[in-house]
Amino acid sequence: MPNNLSATLIKLLSPFLLLLASAAISEPVEQTAELDGQSRSWRLFVPDNIGSGAPLPVVFNFHGTGSTPKQSAELNELESLAEQHKFIVVAPKAEFSYEPGGRQTWNVEQLDSPYNDVAFIKGLIAHLTQHYPIDASRIYATGFSGGARMSSRLACDLADTFAAIAPIAGVRFAHNCEPASAMPVLTYHGTQDPVNHYQHQADSPRYWHEGVEPAIEDWVKFNGCENTTTTAIRAGITKTVWSDCRDDVEVIFYRSEQAGHTWPGSPKADILAKYGLGSTDDLPMSEIIWAFLKQYQRQ
Image (cartoon, rainbow, N blue to C red; front, side, top):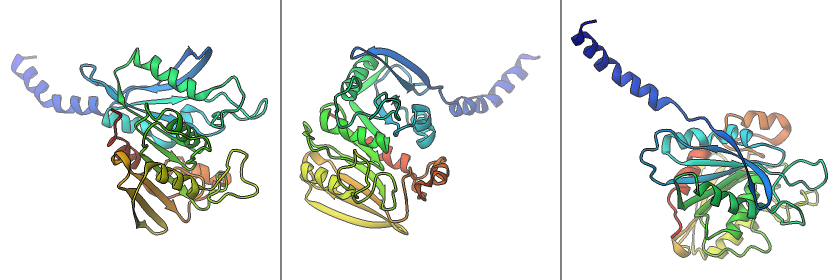
């Protein structure tokens, strides 16, 4: 092939090849290590083409009770978002259960058990920091259901590590919650949730000690927020923002009148509905979460 023709083809194909490269997404990996005296595992996603090793934000993505890191990744598609915006996603695996052979979940109540999940996450952060370019000032947590309760727990116990949280369908403020500093919180809950009841009921799960609004009110009170604004953003959906809080944080609550136990905007939401967990909303919740989290960093 003549050299001038080769050069012409390369010039014409280069934009197409670059487009293919930018569309590619890194593959997540399953990892295991000895942490806090136990073998623990997690799913790790590191975006492609991260350059010269500049430190990256990290989002911990906690799965719900009886679920898995892989299912959590499929539920909220945070890894695709992470590829686009260049942040790391860590999806730890729960090992605790309330009874032998029971569904695996997070030891949010810190019951007597071999599994201390706060210590696990603290050790996991230290472990990952040794191997990956992690920005220690921009570590965040989100999760669904039981994973929402776990991200809430970490905001209580590791507020000097986590810069912001976004618990979905399971926000908590533990009775022994004593955060070291103000904590930005974004949450979503449907009033028709048949699992984590919007209002506490006699048949609420053993771990569900109060309703959603009291938990949010505790975060608002702790953060010292002074102003409140509520806006209707969809039919049946309101967004309440508590602002003028300590350290310039905010508490944001998306309340849905029609939704059940769901992650809004998830491609798996219809599957949750088929299991009797109620309808969903079309809010792009994962994008909303990242837009909120990335505003904050620990000093």
